[in-house]
Length: 193
Length: 327
Image (cartoon, rainbow over the protein chains, first blue to last red):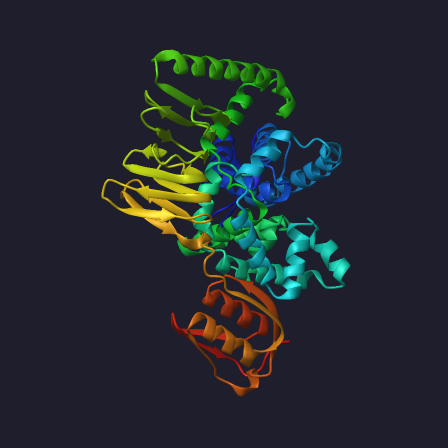
């Protein structure tokens, strides 16, 4: 009837604790937000990220009788979200190809009016002021949307180097764009996309 | 807490969607360890959102749980996965209703009191040209109220929320926007007014012309094109947001420049003292460009690139430490 699982405690791991609907509810309340953020980082769509995490929990609720998990509930959830998110990305890849041509007119007009060119310039200037290789890698990741592995292959570098350079870019951009984060509060209100 | 060699690497890996489940958990533990870590993470997330032109994501855990727990009860016998495909009909019906409501609401308000006009945008923004040929775009959940006599006796409007204005200047009838105690007066201009979600901050971004901001405390500031100002409602305070001020252009384009030369140029331009504490640094070469950056940012980028250490003695005095450069 119940799922046997290792439940992680903040300090120690207690084994074979029985997980019922109540524990799943607790796990939901504790991990929903970080899990959605994690899913979002991979699929870049807020609604899909929420649906996906909810689906993972629904599966967990339904599978109570026949599922045996040997790792902690938290690790199980993260892994499940990770794999569903990757699947979703694969599904979406085909759909996006079809959508490319249908950019709505409204969106373009909208952008014309609310283009915050100053902000855009500032962002571009901040990226340009990064060390050359760092800027190149950052642009490949953010604007060409390449994966770390693809960037590494293209530039003949190791993934570790790409990770370091992206970390460095983040560190420097955080400092140079810090003041602009004030503006971001305003940009978020009135969704400029 | 496990060892994290470089938190920036981990955060960026997470934000670009390349973190493994283990790394995602490691980052969550680090964030939850203390408030400083969490604040640092949020700032990084905002930087990425800013660059990707993406709004911060927000959601309600309670509502989400109710959604799946009710599904659980209903679906004890039959299991149906939640997919978006179940909603189109409902969504279509809902949008028809919303449109009807907007139409109804709109016509009711427009005709309710003679001479008085109110334009309200509910779910989507609306474009509206006023009697005086002022063009506006009203943001969702915002409204513009106009009293009798507009364009004959006065050109005052009351704004709630956010809107864009393109105004033709008329010296006899200056265009004024009232937002409680806060006033925006134009002098021929295009500008954007945005109110924050908590309704406590109002920002004015000027694209063309001149705008004057004032409040009940007789505070007054003037904004020119490409400048911004903001008003904090709870404090009744107006301030310049000089981030967008283009007046002072500080442009540098270094190509294999000697560090000593770079430092001399920067000290003169920013009027600060910058000391290289080791002669080994003089001949390091540096390539990059900076446009209107603050001096501490410029120096941080340079030292980070060259593997040197930056020491800030004061806002006007810096020392660059380190015996040799990483080239």
